Image (cartoon, rainbow, N blue to C red):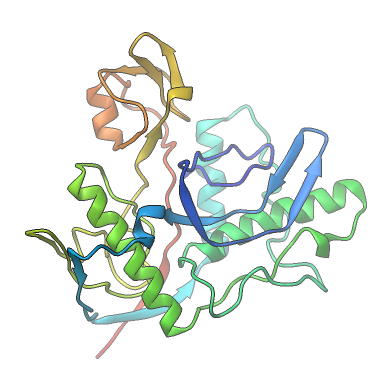
Length: 275
């Protein structure tokens, strides 16, 4: 569950070039090792363009959104990070994930962001608070209020874009983005193919459908037709850079199995079952 934040010693989860940022955490902070932006929640830029041959129908759910277990997610993040890089420090693991007094918010109820944004911002706040402690600066400059639940309209638009993006990934034969939806996005039809909510990754309100697939880029090339895999030992062959792959696909391409989990697991909220 290696997380998307560029703050040492927390390693960087590689997001994909060409993606559109819908939830911005714009505070920046700098240390002697470089600069870092607070965590961002992104979905594919392709989802912004709704083509004439793609239609979507709203769905329904038997469950409603519960509460986010922020501390539980952070604990699981640091436990996994220790498994991937046991020689490294846990960094800001014990630092407060809350915004410092006087901190502003990078979010508004009308913004488009995923349920995972609260977990990413909590992690960013830990890094910001740790940096402020180290430098003696005001932590309010480097933290943000945690995002709440956006408006119903913003939720629906985020869900629509993510569903369309995942439908296009399936059309292209690529694994989907497993980020949580706010609600059931309903089926999506592209051409003559209809994808159900479950195929598009809907697992319940605020529920991630599993670990994110792994992005392999040309930067991972270590030899002719040979590529490294972020957060894993070993290399793979017979794949094409510039694509997402599941861990199982990479293992089939030569990645040794039995390694600590180095995939990114989006955070999930609890669910409340309706009567």
